[in-house]
Length: 224
Image 1: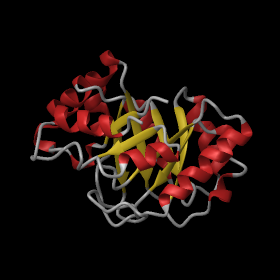
Image 2: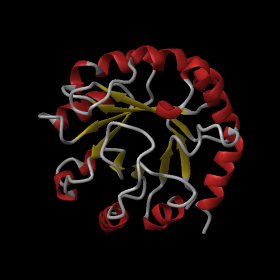
Image 3: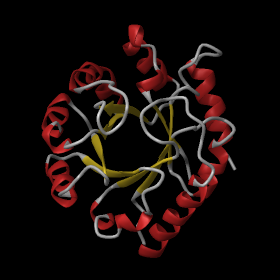
C-alpha cells in the first residue's frame, strides 16, 4: 500500500505560507492538512476559512486536496464557511458533534469528503454507527492543541485495531489518517499498523533541512 503524506501547515512559517505549501506540493505532498482550533475544545487558537480560501488557488491547479480538521465546539456552525472557502475534505470530532450523522451528511451533500476524528482516550467503539457513512477516520496520536508533541505509543494498537475493523467490514476504500508525533522514527510503525495517510508538521516544516528533503526522508521511512 502506498502511504500518503499530508503536511500540516500548523507548523509552517506563516510569513511565507503560500511558498511553503507550494514547496510541499512540489515535493510530492498528497494533501495539505489544515488544523483549525477554537481555544475551547482545545487550548489553542489557530486559523479559519480565510486561510483555506487563500490556499485554494495554490492547491486547486495541482489536484492536491485541502484537508480541514475542525478541532472546535459546534463545528456545524462554521462548516458552511469552510465549504465556501474551498475545503475538499472536512473532518469533525466525535467528541464535539451532538448530531454526528447530520453533520457528516451535510458535508457529504456539499460534495466534500467527510471524516471523523478520535482523541487518544476516545474508544474505537464510538465509531460503530457512523463508520459506514464516512470516508476516513483520523486517529490522533497526541492530545490535540499543539504541534511538535511526542507520539503516544498505545496509538499503534489503536491503528491496528481500526485497520482490522476496516478489513472485517470490507471497507477497502476508507482511509485511516494519523496525526501527532509523526516523524522518521514513528512513520514506519504507524504505516505498518495500517495507516494510509500520515500527517506531519514539525517533521516537514523545520529549519534543520528543506521541505523537499524532509518529505523524502519521511516517505522513505514508510517503505517496507
